[in-house]
Length: 193
Image (cartoon, rainbow, N blue to C red):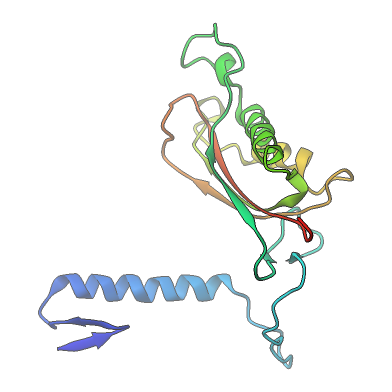
C-alpha cells in the first residue's frame, strides 16, 4: 500500500494513479502562477494587511492579486448574464443581446446595481471572473478586446481607479446560446462598514 498526500491506495489501482497525477498537476499549476521572489530578496513577512491592498504591475489594467484584511465582510456576486436589449428581436439575433462589449457592459451595470442594494459600489470589487464563448460574428474567436473595452470603462479609470484581480476563461458554451459572456464578482466592504 502506498500513501500520497493523505490518500491510501493499493498500487494496482488505476484510480489513485489518476488522483496522484491530478494532485501533482495542480501543485505544478499553482507554483507556475506564483512568481518567485527576486534573487537575493527575502520573503515578505506573513503579516495580514490592515486594508484591502492590490498588487502587481502598475502598467497592467488588472492586478496580479489582492490582499484582504481578516474579518472584512464580503459579497460574492454569482455568474451574471447579459440583459436583453431588444425583447422583440428574435432569439439568435445579435440585436437581442448585443456583442461581447455590449453584453459585458450590461452585466457590469447589473453587478453595480446588485452591489448598491448592499451599500457597495464598483470601487469595492476586488476580483472578477469572466467566462467568454467564441463569437460567430468574429470568426468563432473569443472577443477579448470587447471584454477588455467594457472592463476598461468601469475599472482603472479616473472615476474608479480600482484595478481588480481578474480571470478570463474561455468556455465552449453558456446556458443560453445568445450569450457571449457571463461574469462573477467578489467585493469587500470598506473599513468602517
